Length: 396
Ligand code: GDP
Image 1: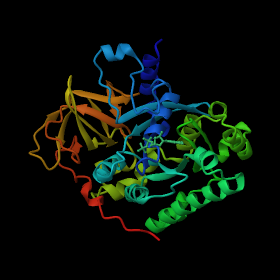
Image 2: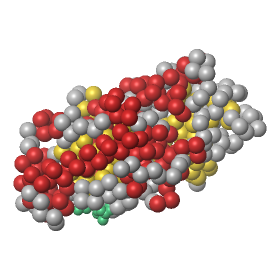
Image 3: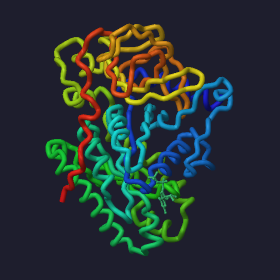
Image 4: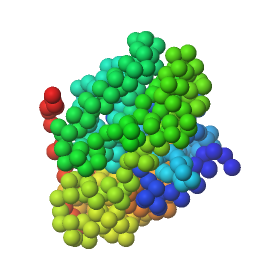
């Protein structure tokens, strides 16, 4: 079986098991290494060629799929990760790293439940780190931390092992201070980052290795081993012993919430309708048998299929031919033409899609970014995305 077909099979099996789904985004200040890390995660999951990873260049994993005209979409990808004998579907939504990115990060944060906050070990937290973290917390998106470019600390700044630990500790403290200042309640309720617990990993996206305390325990690699390998320039060996992909995705699967857990926390914040209504209960419980409720977070153009609306399905299910309504529009019926999800960097049609997934649908002629789509003719729309954009307030 080709790798592409195998991915399709595994993804379709997992998309109906919300407890095995993680919808995540990677957020970072520009140049801290988000592109390098995303590419290496995909290469690790066998989705893009390892040669192209780190060059911000995507490649379809299966030429057959390309020949069938399935679109490659670099902004949404799905990966399957195995952890302790179970498979997980990881839907990763891209968040742009530019200065004028605020709105796009907000959109992405609406679609996901967890974020990997990436910080450059040498530069530390920067203004955009703060902004993206703020956007995440406002949407009740749970953070974990990856401290990147640790190779530079060792090889360029020539810090010793002790100094390296102190510097990494300082970055963690700063991010924790930001989280506490932004949302003390969540901070006190388990969102404080803690390297010993495993919500922090560090490494080098460029050289494709990472490490965390749980992974050290699992693999027997010590902090000293990491330091020594890096100092000796044995990056390839380190990448084999402690691959970026495994360390990061283990952290994602263990510490970032699945949609069942996340929606209970998020629905009251992003939607102000009656929580006891059928749609309210449906979203709270991530129930596939409730009225369908989707928030559109992106619209793109596909030369084969036309406009594709991507968004988070919070309640109910979607299938081809379903009649749905777009709130705050003329409320004429929109008929779904294709219902798809992302598999690797490609979009493929599925027979039916359940709550908790990121949906990519065609046929929503009245939808714009931010639209609420439902099988109900009338429902309270989701809180608008603009609502969450605000000037950066510096936390001392
Ligand atoms: P983005 O703007 O956050 O997407 O950052 P990029 O992934 O484009 O990386 C910015 C620069 O940092 C590039 O030149 C990368 O090669 C480099 N870079 C990324 N990760 C690492 C790392 O772990 N170590 C080192 N030394 N350089 C890195």
